[in-house]
Image 1 (cartoon, helix red, strand yellow):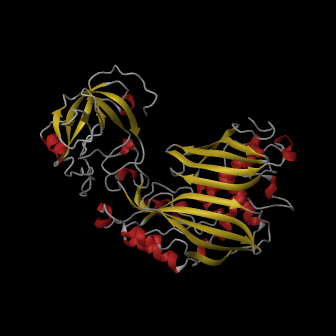
Image 2: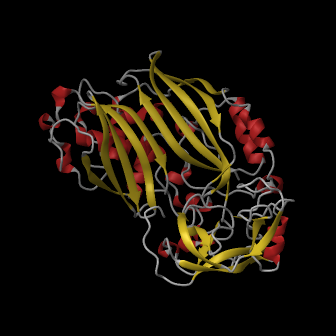
Length: 155
Length: 360
């Protein structure tokens, strides 16, 4: 893992994060984002509307991308911009693998290209802009990366 | 039924939802897009004004979000907690009871697309910029506008229009962030022809081969060639299974595709030479995206150099799309596409080509 490797440099690769797309994650993400569209929690309704099962809403994808970035850069990193484009839907039973590459670093501002793939293809592609204050190099963060396995509801 | 998205408001289905087929005039219209002109008039209009977040920014909702996302960032807990920035849209959501905050203009726009048959919706993009952190106690207000409407686009899911809205979010009256949201309002492609894969775009492997459609809907047809005064002779040749190359009557230069005059000497007089049909792959590309109706990507499009020296663009057939190589010898044949259309294509006659860097 590259966590703790100091300030970001263009070309740095973020360790991939595997996220099991469980029914629980899809529903918990939808409700936590206040999105009650039935296709995100009611499989029968989703099928009636032409989807094989419930699928993750865009707000959850956005939240997971944000988490992926701050997990890596530590709690002092500040998200400035998250730009995502969706492709293949995240259905229960699938696994999404998030990966990222630091594209550019100017001062304390970095841009990271993020890709999330699942069994159907690219679920999400995007770019995250963040600032990483020099005083907060990841060494002194409690390295959340250590507890990265799996996904979701951790209590 | 129609599922209406609420950009910047409710979450939006990621997959296509059932829809009626679009009006025939729109499906086949090749000329001016009158609908686009009407949709375009909505750019810049209010999509929703004076929205107020149902809850102040608060710790319980932040904690529920972090639990769902598996986000253990300490910045989101404790006395100095901020909300995860990616929650921006969540604070504007109407929840189960909804908002009713969409403007008449925005409802009109969506209704116009529904009426034209573009009843399905898919969220394609979300762009958020965060101007200041949100903290427990912040009161959220927001306004949204229709930023842009695209021309009609054909995507893997179907044909439709991209609608982009932009929401300005404030906290305690101060700008806190912007939220740009793009949806595709579309008429699904392939729904009837690939019932097994309803709900998402069929992959290439899942596409039902032509002739095996289960539905009574006619399969999409290849575009018709535009035959005019200048190229009628070429198509007349194709109808007789002859590939005709123009030859300048002044300087004898061969030319292809057909043109009214000679590029070498300007002479307007010409006759024709029948191609032997032998050629080689001079270059090629593999077409993956976007998929057009009646085409089944990926497929190879070759720039074939005929033995006579002119080059012509056509399909390279007889090998998988990923086996086409520069230098491959090919031979002309005529492929019947449907009852009224035949096209010259080139079948690979050997596999002696080299891997080319400018292919693919």
